Image 1 (cartoon, rainbow, N blue to C red):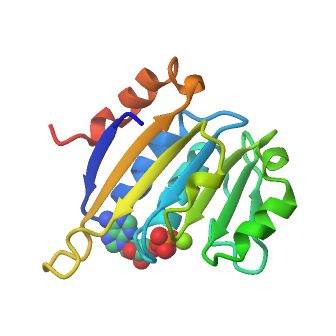
Image 2 (image 1 turned 90 degrees about the vertical axis):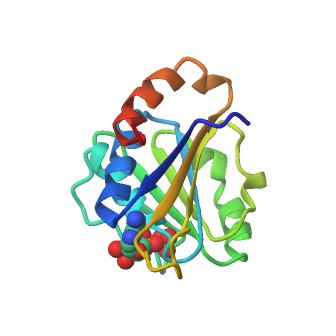
Length: 166
Ligand SMILES: Nc1ncnc2c1ncn2[C@@H]1O[C@H](COP(=O)(O)OP(=O)(O)O)[C@@H](O)[C@H]1O
Ligand SMILES: [Mg+2]
């Protein structure tokens, strides 16, 4: 897996803006997997991502249903697997079918993304500053994997360039 972008954010707005930049590059069939501890900023990232896709509804973590669907320029499915038993639920739902016709964003609490298709963007959010007096600091790592991303990776990198440390 090739490393692509490691960005630092100092607040929720910045993380949301990065989500928006990634969202601007997405199209039907794409999958984005968000990994990070509770409170890391996965849903915050998803909000920006959905906004870039024309979603005007308020994006919140799906609580009662495993999948929350939003209407946008392209439909967005927001999946939250905060409990391990939801993996089975996801499987029963037919995950491959869900991916068709929409952009899918999955939030994970654990590093169990192995069961998901390889063709995807992984976003890992770490709360590096927490405890050191900077609770709002996050490190956001973004990696696009799979042959489908080979042609599109430069555009994604360009969209993320404004958030680099330079
Ligand atoms: N740099 C940051 N990026 C994202 N969220 C941040 C940041 N700093 C503080 N926060 C706060 O952390 C919380 C993240 O919540 P949320 O996005 O729901 O996390 P998760 O979905 O990973 O559990 C929000 O209350 C947000 O305001
Ligand atoms: Mg969440």
